[in-house]
Length: 100
Image (cartoon, rainbow, N blue to C red; front, side):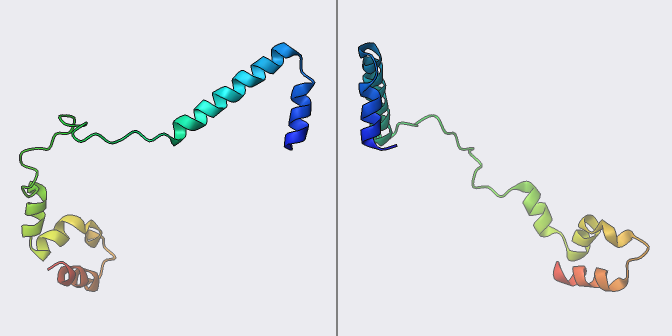
């Protein structure tokens, strides 16, 4: 739809509907203006809304435990498929050496 056909359609409307069209166009313009307006950031505006635990920098206990495990313990814990009857020793040796 081009501008001329739009104007022709608006001109064909009764006066009360032309006012409604005008109000709608003004509404759309304010909607566009609101999208382009950027609110300035205020330093400290989220103060008190975010909390960081006192032990944030401390190592995670579960990570410490897993890092201290030997390769054998790791394989025993995480590679349950090794207990199957079809497992050959090469899979075990590969994982044992990789996570040693």
